[in-house]
Image (tube, rainbow, N blue to C red; front, side, top):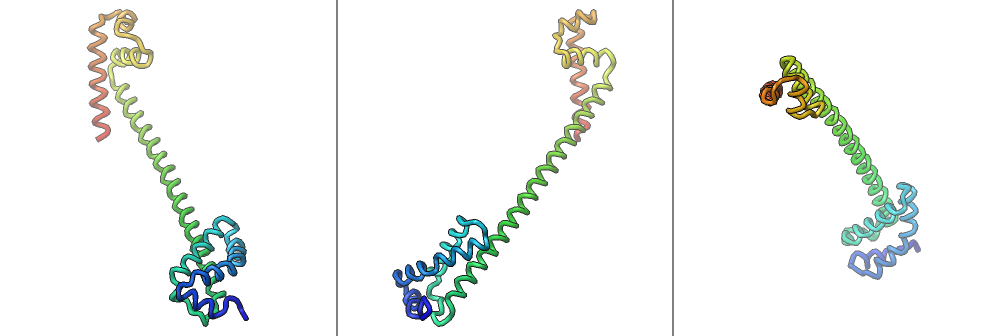
Length: 179
């Protein structure tokens, strides 16, 4: 007599939990061995076997006791494993797509930063020599108005006025270039 017999399957279809437990206990080890051979991952195989048996219990009324349950079970496991592989492949493709999008975005940001820097450099180069000198002393060297005034032998107010004008011109040129 092939196990499970037709009577056990009939009892499972009627909701007999003891019959289902017997069915599960009979097939658990071979089902797990089969699934591990496909997946090469014991933990995932155990989850898959559990999922298949849950589905069998949920759909127990659809079981045909006179059909080959063994074939049914292993076909379900095989199909579930194939679905798992498809899902893994899709996830890998999504990950690659995401990484490529990040790389492209990084390149775009780098290009944008380089473009902004060249706009600022061009705007600075368009300033008069004196304004450019005052601006560089203030920004690049961190000198105060007083230090710049003493270094260039001009008044502190002149330094202040030239910096205000230089920054205003730069703001306008950079704003125009970003439009």
